[in-house]
Image (cartoon, rainbow, N blue to C red):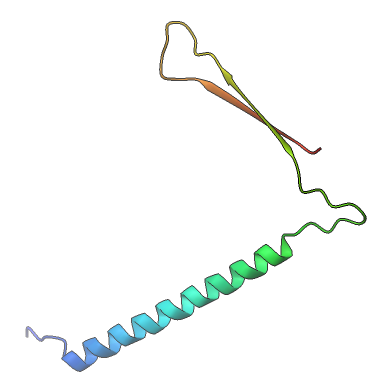
Length: 77
């Protein structure tokens, strides 16, 4: 009762796997391109392409340990 899968069946499964993989990759790349195109802000008048980032790193508590705190503020200019 120990039957092996025939070489033809294995070949068909490998080819189908490659086709599904290529179709999935193409679909993801296609959809990612649509998201990037749709993500552009629709600003009437003046478009802003600059910003300001400030990072404050707090000193670790005494005694010195491996923990800390980072505060990130993102403000629209």
